[in-house]
Length: 376
Image (cartoon, one colour):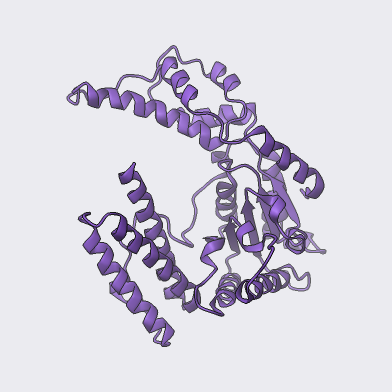
């Protein structure tokens, strides 16, 4: 478990560092400093939690290089090329603005959502002359976690060959007073610049409720950031400026969103738990590289997995594969080149230990909010 936790933290630090470097190269100073600072926080946490780790020296070195770069950026010393000392710890992880390669056929089910997206994004990109009244440029995906909201956003970017800004709402916030609203401004300016260069821009903000949710009390910086976001969204939605910049928000808690922001998302799409047919498609995707025994009854599994999210289903097959791999290791049979096939018993035992991650009470809340605010 400790190793898993450290790997997860390192992955997050790498992601933040890569985003920072990409912003740095684009001259988005405020966003770059924010992401460098977040990477530093995570790396220092790793050093504290695992002081004896052989990676600690590397983490410390990276922290110093990122701190140095922050000082340079705060002093206005922005170079054309990012200093080599701020190179990522690793390069295999996803970085901001890389072109996604998610196709429509890789996303199971959610046909209503795909249809709404085509009408709001794909068709206007291909034939803007057919939309004299403009088209939706604010889209909200809401629903249980693990049902494909991020995949949908990435698929849109692939379909229209867009520049994809994939950030979480927390990354917009900054410790420096006054920097957060600049982060928001820089983000939207970069997206608008991409359209001037002939590429649509998609700003995807995960967990957007942490940015535009209802607040009991707010400090000045939060108010300014939310107001700046509202202003930028209004500029994007301006019917007199038919630009191809899209703001896509994703949330697992739509009921906490503030009313002024809800209406600015002209399409509000419920990304629900997978239906029977969607689960069948997911089964085909998840099992194509697995060795299943002849006794595996996928139709029976389909019936028993009603209420499971897409990520829940993936976890079931992943855990079943881990089960057979463990046998290989524990039985000192490493000379074997392959593990035994996954049986129906493996899958059923796994399901006994892995229940659906979404409760019926949560589904009731989603359905109630959908009936109140749906806009497909």
